Image (cartoon, rainbow, N blue to C red):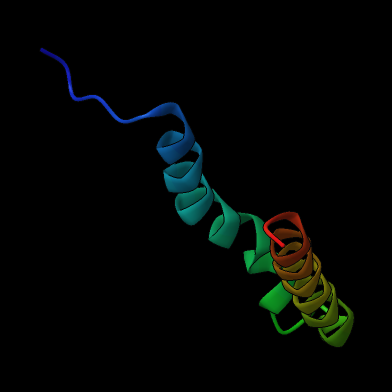
Length: 57
């Protein structure tokens, strides 16, 4: 029997592994708009938190 992970957990695992490699160039010394990138991620977090709160209200 193969190692089995539910489909949604596979995407979560992929996100934990892939996203740091995708955003790593944003935090190099040569990359200038660091504040914009961090603000974008804060906005994404706030959006999905608000969406989840309203969805379950």
